[in-house]
View 1: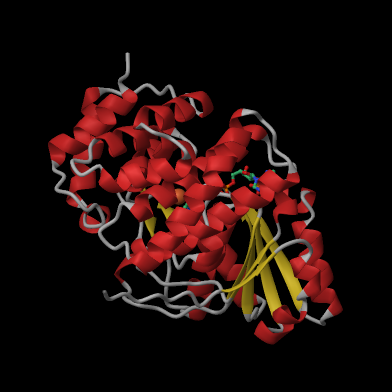
View 2: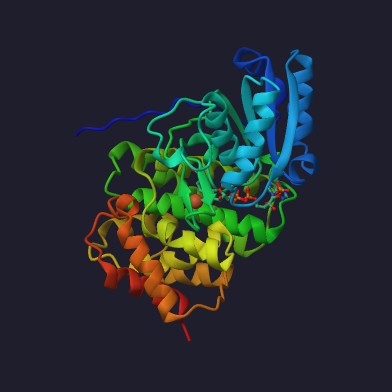
Length: 366
Ligand code: NAP
Ligand code: FE
């Protein structure tokens, strides 16, 4: 057996972790750019807690609160200009995956002033200034991954920045998610679940990464039940956050595979939220496997005997109706097949016909 396990992010998990570990910020830097979405960080208490911790430890800060969902390279460039002109020495990303991923990309742009939106993808490996991450959704796991998923309007797609930017520290306190609306709770939980699935059924999975997958499925046995019953208690919030962290640690080692890669055009062209874009493809993805043994193990941990029971849970939680034509499916499938990055993580042979079939069966139901 051989594997490499690398998780450089210092993880602080639990209630009030920001205030209780405030000295972490002053060890990392002396002037921070805080990167958030437009409003949620100010409402859920996360921004206030970070501000308090910084002022108590003498760290200066300024705020960039313009990150949109599925952050664009234009927004990232704008944030990095503000950071550069104010000489910040680290970045704090607070929010869902969008602000956390934008924070990572801004940290790369600030460290490398010659980098801009048109040369980033051909730049080779780059360093970044340090990043601290504070998740306020339980979904992406971005607080413990090296990935930054950005929107390239030039290429009309979402893609990984192609750099490795693990946050130096992650402060994970599920109280920031207490008021997350039901719909966003479901969509982001489905994202976390798809990370666990795609990381578990992956060319790069190891006995070590499977530990996180299997723990995540165990948590989801509880979380699915509560999501269906709409019982979003603090205990649920903490467990789904934990499952999301498990999924993040797992995909940091394995990467994601077909549903994530195939979901990007559904977000870019059809506006589907990220979790739904993966989620709508997941059941047909699972059905496409010739080798079902590992899927059976996963279902067993989830407390299901057959894939149909997981399908029933998905049908109960998500209802995606989009207008899509067979020509569009063909186009998305062709461009997916042309990009080998996700395909190589899928442990079975898959060709154009297989991809078209997964899209069609998932999206052309009636
Ligand atoms: P998001 O795009 O960050 O946020 C979605 C919405 O939720 C926004 O309107 C946001 O409002 C709101 N929101 C966030 N936290 C909230 C809270 N505590 N209470 C109420 N509303 C809240 O959603 P996400 O699903 O977390 O992130 C998706 C992005 O992450 C996608 O771009 C995806 O590709 C990426 N992703 C990254 C990784 C990775 O490893 N890096 C993995 C999977 C997905 P505001 O805008 O006001 O904050
Ligand atoms: Fe995801």
